[in-house]
Image 1 (tube, rainbow, N blue to C red):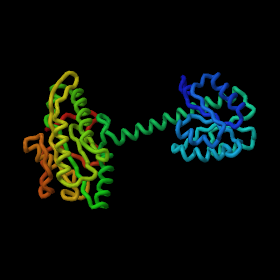
Image 2: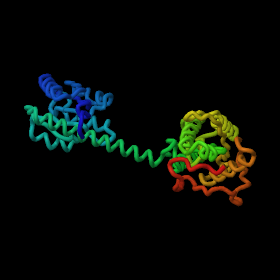
Image 3: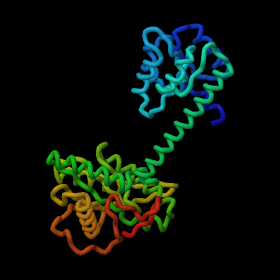
Length: 339
């Protein structure tokens, strides 16, 4: 790791001797470190770290009342990433190995040698930054695996997980949940006239509007192309699910102004309710999908509730669809639309 990042790191100095604290502060300030804190009270370290999340703690191992080893045990309860940012400070050679076994990443000996202190501090901060970078990269990869890259909504995999949890809750509580299947009306025309870039912007705006129509515990997912699914975690009945679907229709139908172009688009919605229209995710999705087809046949820009008796039946003439959790065949951007 290069550049000034280590110099901006948050460093805490812990030593019961004021002279040692002042010496370490002088060394680090002289080397250009900008964010230094210190305490002579070992019992305050854990609370300070919980509040400030230090990148490095220079920790004296021999202090009255509470030694450095006890402090490290407390820090382990805070560091859920299993990385203890501690540089142990000791005058006892025998404590070095014990410090490393206790979780310290390195040690420095007393009396201090300025070059040794600065080298070990710099090395540990670079390791810390690399560790943080790897952690953030892992989070980014996890987000890509669970979220639609264009809109940021849940993807099929995350929708499948959320529906599984919602169904478990509904069965346990003997309550209802709902699935809303949405398809934009005439999206292909937008793509054809304004281009795929404008289509992508439209999908992002539709996603933002849909999120505002539901509760925090509900899930809005993009299935690919111009199709979306809303899974309502707990509903009091059909009326509530339909009211959410109608709010979604109204939200989507408001005019858009994107890249200087003003236009309108509508959506059709199919609704299915657990357990009336299916007792598993696949059946509920099929029921909502069939209801969506009926909404399209009724003139679009409307809501239809599943008529369970129509399932199973002959498949309607439309593009194939994978159930939640299966691999989608769509690209990250919009794939046009067929309806």
